[in-house]
Image: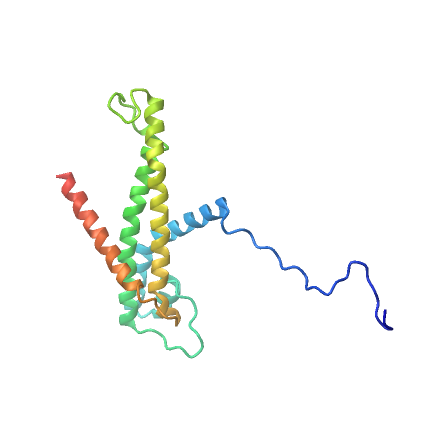
Length: 201
């Protein structure tokens, strides 16, 4: 060894190992993230309404940062005008209505699946999995699982879609597909409501 150099056992020239991050494909963290995004989707309607009200009463920055969740603007970026904030708030309201419809469907799927035995005590002779309560409960639970998963996926997608549509409020570029996707989603939600109302008559 050369002079002036001290040898320590186990010392190498390699960089320290990076801190290992948790695997994003793990089940519980993904489920928790989906539940968090679903919860945020349900709050889109009141957030959009409060953003419109805040803008119309002169509190533009509160509308942009607090209710539309846009965060701080880059240095030197111009603040969005009132019209843009109102339009973003209105779009957030529409996406929020769609999210509330999906949340209602999710609640129904849980009630008619996991809690089937508590909400339906009638004879189960003509029910799926009947005539026993256990068979009907198991059948409804199995059917509700994909419905719950699909609702969580769509709610998560709505939260991310709203994030993409509000990108200009953060000084970022909005993807070209964001607004058309939001428009199609709102149109499908309207068609669902119309079909459901017609079914009630």
